[in-house]
Amino acid sequence: MNDTEDPLRAVRIGKLESLRAQGIDPYPYGFARTHEAGELERHYAGLPAGGEAGERVRVAGRVRAIRNSGMFIDLHDASGKIQVFCHRDNLPPEAMAVVRLLDIGDLIGVEGLVRRTARGELTVNAAAVAVLAKTLRPLPEKYHGLADVELRYRQRYLDLIMNQESRETLRRRSRVVAALRSHLAARGYLEVETPMLHTIPGGASAKPFVTHHNALEIDLYLRIAPELHLKRLLVGGLADKLFEINRCFRNEGISPRHNPEFTTLELYEAYVDYTAMMRLTEELVTAVAETVLGTLRINYGGTVIDLSPPWPRRAMAELVQAATGVDFLALDDSEAARRAAASLGAGLTGGENWGQALEAVFAARVEDSLIQPTHVTGFPRDISPLAKADRTDPRLVERFETYIYGWEITNAFSELTDPEDQRTRFEAQMRARAAGDEEAQPLDEDYVAALEYGLPPCGGLGLGIDRLVMLLTDSPSIRDVIAFPTLRPR
Image (cartoon, one colour):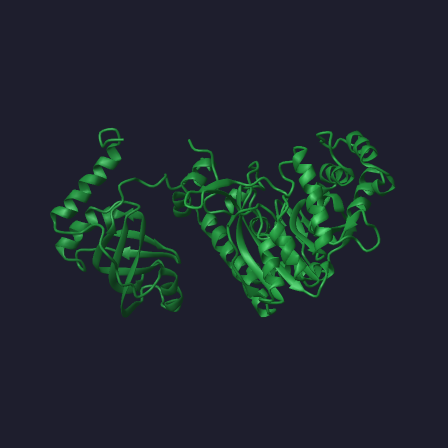
C-alpha cells in the first residue's frame, strides 16, 4: 500500500521527515529510565493533590492519549499509566516542536519533576521529551479496540497494546509456569531438556509433523511427546525425579481446546506408582491456583469449580455404566463392545477393539459431565501401550486422566518397565498402524533396549499447561492463552 492509498500513514511519514529535518533520530538506540509508571504511583502514593516532589525522573512508554493540543499526554508502559504535562514554561521551543509532531501510539521518553494535580492525577512536568519510535500506522479506535477476534490473534501485538485483559492473561500464564517450576524444584525434581526432532515419533498416540534433514538425508518428526526420552534419562540414573516443560506438536485439528503446537509439563518419579501421581496432580494444581489466584474456588464460564483436594477417583467403565446402564466389563469381545458403543451414539469407524469402543462411549457420554475435578482410572490396556497392567484386571492398566470442566488436564501412568511386555505392546500398535491407524505408536527399538538395562518402578505425569491456564484465566479458547496460535494464512 502506498502513501496515497493511506492518507493517515502519509501524514505520519511527513512528521517523521520533519523530525529528521530537525536533526532528531526518531529511532534512537536507548533511553535510560529511572522509574516505571506503576513504581511512581507506589512511591508517591502519599503525595497530596496539588503537591510537588523535588525528584527528577525519567519515564518511557507509548502515547495512548493526547489532550489540549499536546499539553497533556497519557503515557503507558508495561506497569501502568502516568500523565505527562507539556508546557512552554518547562519545555524549550525545540522540545515543544517535537511534542507537536507526536501521534497516539508513538513511543517517547520524558524527563521532569513529579507532581500531583489538583484533581489528584500523578503527573510528570516534562522538561525534556525524546521520540523513541515514531509510529507510521494508527492504533485501532480507542473505545472499540479490536472487535475482530481473528485479527486479535493474527496481530497479537495490537491486541496487547489495546487490551489489558489480554496482557493480564499472558502474564498470568507466565506466573503459572513459574509456579509449576518452583513447586517441582522445591520437591527435588531436576529440570531437563529433550529433543524436539525425533527419528521415531513416540510417547503418545498422535499423528506427527514430518520434516527433512538435508545433511543426514533423513526424515525427522516434530516431538509429539517427550516421554520416551525422559524415561531414558531415568534409566541412566540422571535423577530419580525429573521434569520438562516442553513444546509438543501434533498434526491434528484445531478447536477451542486444541492447537497443533502446545505446551505440557511432563515428569517422572522413580519408586512410586500412579497413585503418587494423583496426589502430585492435586498438589500442583492447587499450589498454582493459590499462588496465581489466591483461592481454590475458581469461576470458569460462569461455573464455580472447587479445586480443594482430595478429588474423587472414578473408573471409566463405572462412569460409563452410570451414564448409560451398559457394563463394558461384562462384554466379552470387541464385536460386542462395538455394537454397544454404536447403540449408545459413539462415533466409530468400524475397526475398534474393546478398549477403543469403551473410550469412544466415555468421550461421547461422560466427558462433558465431569465439571468438578475428577481422576478417571481404569483405562483399557488396548489404548495405553506405555502403562503397567492393572493388578486385578489384565484388560485395564494403571492409568488415570484428570478432568476439570469436561476437559482432560492430566494423563498419568504407573509406567510400564517390563521390556518384553513393552515390545509386545508396540507390536500390537504396529499391527494397528498397518491396518490404517495413523496415530498408533511405532516400535522404538532403542527405547526397548533402554528398558532392558532396567527402568525402575516409576510414576509418570503429563499436564496440559494451555488448558490449565484457560481455566485459571476464564479464557474461552486456547488461542487466548497462546501468544501466537496457529492460524490459516489469509
